[in-house]
Image (cartoon, rainbow, N blue to C red; front, top):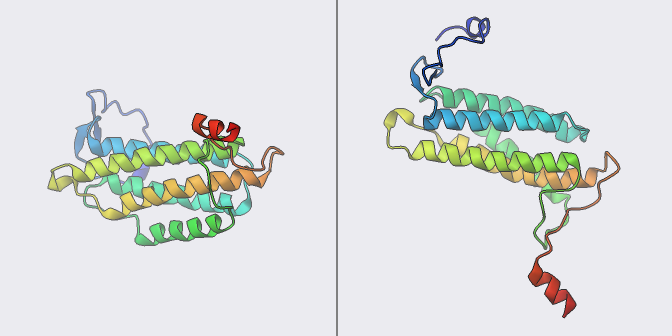
Length: 199
């Protein structure tokens, strides 16, 4: 592979004008290839977390999200090189620990909640939905009948845990009250529940 420094000296290479792009191992594939789609969704997820990090956040949440951004970069690197291993199982376990830690401090959910509340919580919900899409893209890639496209279980597991964690962090951020607007989740009010209340 060419050194990364050489790649970054020329951003507009024009090599993609024919509808193909280069993977990390130097091979070229169509830009609608399932591997490229998965890489793009992971990149979008990382960018979404970058927007969230621009908001006021509790220190522990900020530190966690910065670590996650680095791990997502590792995940993108792994996806860009078929057969390469970069994301470690430790990263999945770290998400499990963070999920258990933050969820333990929250009240038990008895109703569905809307992806709303404070701006930071809403952005966490956007990240959650992008993580789900990235997970679907990785699953589609793994299910593709092509040995060259082999995908390990860790990327799928990481994205699955991350979407759950972002849901929990959205609830945490709604309660953080850093902008004076926090307090609670925004609950879904169904017509059925409304009729029950009236009766």
